[in-house]
Length: 395
Picture 1 (cartoon, rainbow, N blue to C red):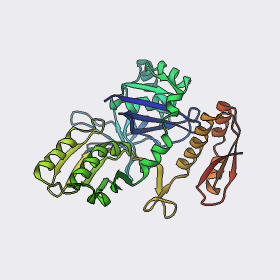
Picture 2: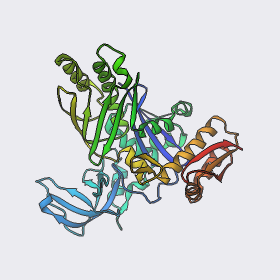
Picture 3: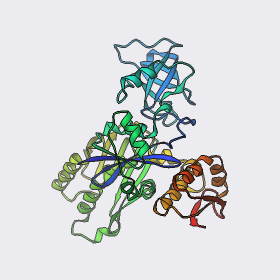
Picture 4: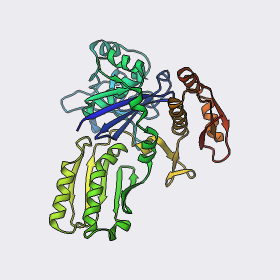
């Protein structure tokens, strides 16, 4: 199965989508071109200048200050000597801060970098800082996606193609092809807890702090086939790994399939799960006769739900969570840009709730980029309704 990486350079955000078999199986995010130097939390694949604060031999490593809210941890192998306290080192981020724990670092950070860039970063000095802020956003995404075995890259802007070429990465520029991929609908769908399987059957995903619990529900499909459990299980298995990958869910995952109708059908389901989705790294446990399956997957990044939402009591996308202002603002600008990409001469009004309108006022460069790119004017106006809602209309 060919894996193609598309990189959409938007006015508010750079978004990557990994495509397999025509569907999106992973998202990647980076700042918009021009916003690279703005403060942000370190991500997996970033390069940081870290100062070793405390050696932790009992834990097999050391804690380091990387300029984030929580200290990061640098594990050391048994053959390595832990770095001395107070030493500054260039390190890579293997896993960002998750679940209240700081980031995990690694000494191997040069993969995918030219010798010249590696040497320049290694010579960096000063306070702890995010060295990969110097990277082009398209290159940030291409570097993070490289671990998946990407075979082709398509971008929507010539400047992104040139930036990748400067790093020795070949990419095609095809704005029309990327315009046909509805990233915003795909992102919204990947945040929904329910995945329809047809005929009333569905998969329900409940994320936890360390993974997810997934329920396969036959619903009305229970009356639509001679052996509905096996039919629904097959549909769920065909979707499972693509959806886990798209949502970036790692850790311990418990899947409650419907009880297979026979041992033979249980073995057939196991073979289907064993064979599917090489792009989602995982280790399968046993599938019990009652359909309960456990699996584990590396948890190396924020899940899509963690990235897009925050704990709250109103405006929920899941129990106890709501979309962040930053996420919603970027979706609003992306909705405007999608309209302008199809009809550049439109004059649009972006109606935003009070909180969202205030946030957009703090990011005037996003509207400026839209005007520079499309020669169009976009007016942000206050809208009635929830403080974080938005709508896009012609003026």
